[in-house]
Image (cartoon, rainbow, N blue to C red; front, side, top):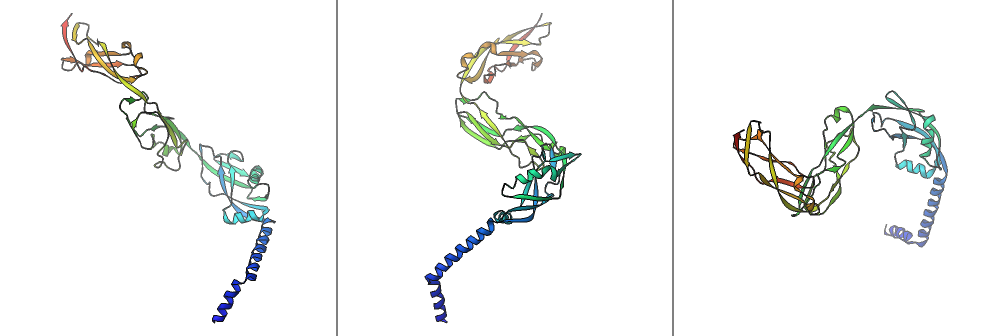
Length: 320
């Protein structure tokens, strides 16, 4: 028994056997390559993938259609088909005819498009069936606003004059009307920005997990752009006017001027003037006939956090 085992080991250690094995593998490789480089005919079942579907159309039987195609090609391609599921694309805008709620593909109209998908080294001999029917339903389009979900904390002395918005502010969603009517807005992913002192310009993903797969969205992200500037605080003294005073009354009030504090960028500070603001008291809003409330009814767009320092105006009513 030991003698037989020793002979076998000796045989595998033999240089002659090693040389024979190398030549055997080379010969086998050449044979395989020769066979694969030859041309063969065969028939395969190809799954059909619809392409270029209109946004307003939804294909109801997009996975049901198949084509039986007879090909003439070399063995390398046949080997590829053995490992990968065969598939061809059908263009649902250029290669079909529309009839009512169906799109009809015919071999006569679509043969050329199918053949081009295989390349020059493959010849398409026949395609069956000669007609495919794609049923579709019409979707509706709805424009919905984008709701940002940001928390922004500016570094002390910095702020922005911009509104916290994204671009675009709304997008189109496409799908069955019963599903679209349930969607009033789409939210961005949550983002927190702290100690902000420089401009922000970043793409932000939309939260689409809770939207049905039957609904298509025109885009999956938006852009968040925010200009940040160095801010300073200003104070300005303004006259107070009283409105809606009955004609038979005369009002004497104090103070007749109030201070308004505001914030603006350093660049805009010297452009702010008294004429940009208006402070009024509405007599109709008198509380308990004891005081008037000053309201800032006009302010320039390039200021933030504008507020009247005096909270109430004392007054005395006299008859005319």
